[in-house]
Length: 476
Image: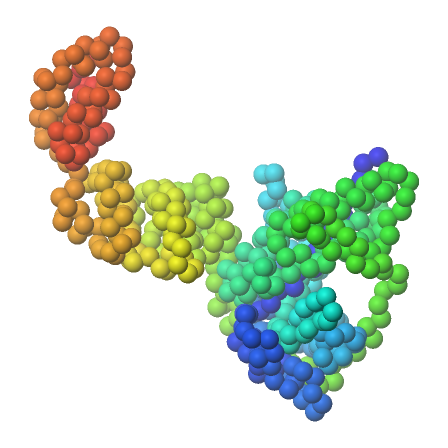
């Protein structure tokens, strides 16, 4: 019997605000433990929450990008539970009043578009971070109170591949919007997935298991692929899947039991008494929406219109920094967009990857965007050949000089004047009769040798395409 996976995903997105959701404490990753807190974050009696309106604006941007309805009356609820990472003994969230509801996102899988419906997006505060050692557990309250938006799908996902594409799309959206850095390895974007299996054609859902805190896009797919296999084997052997919470062990490439679920936890939700409902003005909502950055879908449309193919656009879109850089340079008047793409994604990235000091990005390049545009146009106009281009680019890396100045200084400008090249071709042909005979006898390598002799005689300056064309014309 074949089974149909039914998958829903909850993604917790840390918002990139300067301060926390309900306090003035800063929130930056990597600071000394417990150094980014104020009394409210530690649950001290008498402290009161104050809503971070920048976080609200970011939540509106995200909900809009996900085609959701915006609730302009912001209300919060109190979720009660006692755990060491929750200093107040409760979490402020939006259980009953999510800021966004009923949206969707389209993903592409196997050259087909699939729509994933999104049930809700709600704001809440993050918990503290726990570090478990052999004989003790330590708590870092720096993360406590960091603004979060939790995005919850309907159970529309049916494979690990679809889940991976969905998470990848959400990560792209939040980073392009600028509302989060989307760094899963730092916990800025964390995934919990719910999965159950049912016989194909059945309307009734199977018993679901939850896999907690998946910290990479690849692990989302791997964990679900393993879990589909595990649950299928249980059902095929006549067993029953238990409702469990599981974790994914990346080293073993398998999920393992955290705890068995019996009944749903009663969090005793009620309206947060210390935050009155906030009616957002039309101006606030519109300003949030109108200040949104371009989304990946908009960038892709523009890249395709400029001449890239879909695969090239997708590769470029994996990095917002690269696509912004590419967009900037191409808008300066590059003559061939694909030449720019090839040099950026091959030569320039290879150079940056070889640098061993610090974090390397296009912002560390010594030459300007205008210089790169001029460099690409020198190639497109036939003024330098590929070999000369590498020489020029090397100097640009090291010294940050203008490519126009480098070409002039080294006398590298390629000769494309037909009459000049023709004189050199005539001389070379006159001195290489044997090669002419070999070519006419069917030895194609002889043509390459003759072109090489023309390049040598011109000290590498002759346009090789023109030289080859003239040679073939003269050889009939």
